[in-house]
Length: 270
Length: 311
Image 1 (cartoon, rainbow over the protein chains, first blue to last red):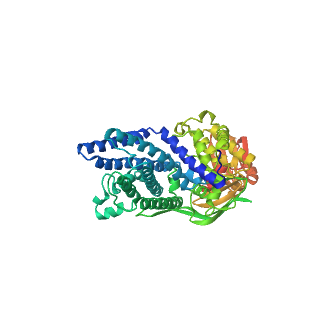
Image 2: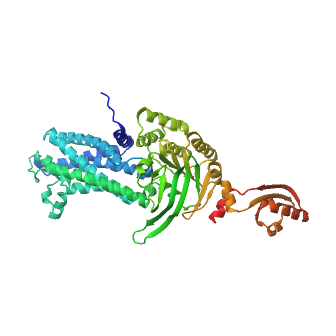
Image 3: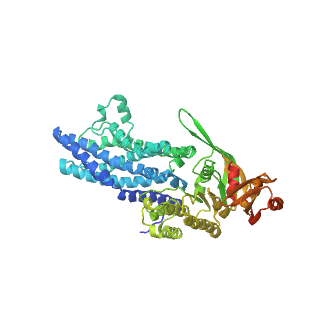
């Protein structure tokens, strides 16, 4: 079946694919990809799983923390791809070229995010296989539907976090690049990666309640025998994720405008 | 018809959090660039040339002033304008691990090109900028000259009506510079492109530009053709002499002689008006008993105008 996307939509799609293609090209050329995709995630799952075995945790408790560990790698890989879309240009001092072109930040973030989703799916599949082989964890136990919702929640959270990282880079320059790696750790610590958010101190628990991933983890873990802590977690998590994706894009647009005003956009290209 | 109509453009850069520093880059620049012209911006380092170019290219927002480019307001219609312009700089850089054809493909897509049209365009630019042998070489392995040619190719990917070139031949070997200048001249000749360039090389400005604006401390000090600038600045004419005996220190004391410089046995005197002073100089040489072996009268070089204005 042939299809044509005309006019404005066609231009939108082409600009999005430009960033997706570039991220793919760079990913295939990046020697650290092996570490990002294979080494660290696998080491993480094996380490956490073996700790659970040593502590003689029940299969349910082991599943609980393995879900957190797998979510961590999935979100981390996805959000890094979007951050890379800006960082590649910051590192090579070529930021100004893409902002000279008639594109919006949505093209950059969407294109890179699509590649991020692809990479995070590879990571999730691989980690689920490792966790099943080594610890008997069944990622499909909840069924395809809940799993798809969980992965969508991970991707949306990664998108919002990564666009905020891009915003910070556009406001502060290359010195904000550590945020690309630090932010996801911070968010997942709050979202209850290895524990229920009920154990968090009250003010921190309030912060956790503002993070969409908290709800997606809660909903997915409910299928493994843990009572849900939130009512309608998917609805709240989805609404929060979409809100943050919108807000982070607004902030990124404002940051680019600020960089055009302050001259940082040019400074990052010198 | 003007391609660029800028009025009273001002820009101050602010830096520092606790100790606020302000640097005035442009202090009310007004400029009109006709369509189809090659327009040069000259000035010393820090004069504001790149700032002005960046504002025109929508990469920087001005603090004040109105700018209409190709009929678009730079602030309100930046997106529409970006489709019709492009920019290349002498110190351009691209993602290091990418190859020239991938870089052109990427930027082509950002301008809405795809499929066969994009492939054709990339091939055309690779050929035109003599990058065929290097199209699959990583960017960080290219020489400075090749990088510059790639920057020019990228700037032509959307076939812009208005092209900004910031020091396009900076750091290039002379033969590469000559070829790049020929490229630039051809772009205007064959495509009617309006080109605004900044340069430190006076010969480049004189060869390429229909009109030149001289900027210093964020202001336009003078503008016109190279010949007009020379007349406007009135730094006089140059009388170059080879005498026997070669030294004539008394020349500097003559009326109308502004300065004399001797090098390799040749004396170059700048005089207020060659037509009036030449007979007086020749008479004085004869009176001193010296013999004129060679004499030339010429207008000052643009470089001398530059030095005078930058003073």
